[in-house]
Length: 283
Image: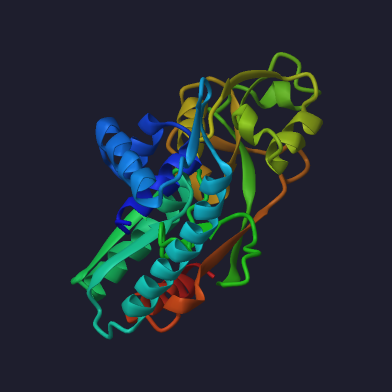
């Protein structure tokens, strides 16, 4: 068995198709098929059932999958421990947070960090997905949901206030009532359960949805362009040109932000320096 075929096998098992798995690992689809055939020949077992909906693990495939996952976890653990043993302030440091948080709050911290530690390459990921700390998809994550993974060291970083914003002089009269005739810019349907969405719908029950986005900066820009009013984090809304804060008689719910990293990296100097700087400037 070629050990390098196991990540290929795991990608196919997780993604369900050769095409999706190829994109995941950066290979071509023919290469994925060839590597899978080589693995099946080496193990003497059919690992997947090919169906019209994709690849489904056979019983033999399930057995291999359980072992391959444990091997993957050990490989990631080894990588983390080796990274943590590196005493220098250089190398790569990958951070993850929401889009607006990265622009409004974290970018100045990263700039300060780079002035202090120019040999560290900081990579910031700002899409909505939750990156895995155990798989080293990110070294340090900031998010609005607490961490419940036992291997993650985390703390509450800060509480962020939210406000209602609109273009100056446009919707103030409408918002004084029940929101009739008032357009809203809110989160997309996948994030419709966010507290600020329920709050603004309660405060303005007759308002209409004008636009949705999972990107807070897009919401702020639409608000500034007159598309409708939006509930935004104060650190973003207060610095966005062309909008002003509205008073509906009650403040939107605030949200806590949490910071976390894998416990195996707690002695990594470049991570420790970043955590200390973020906490000192934002907590």
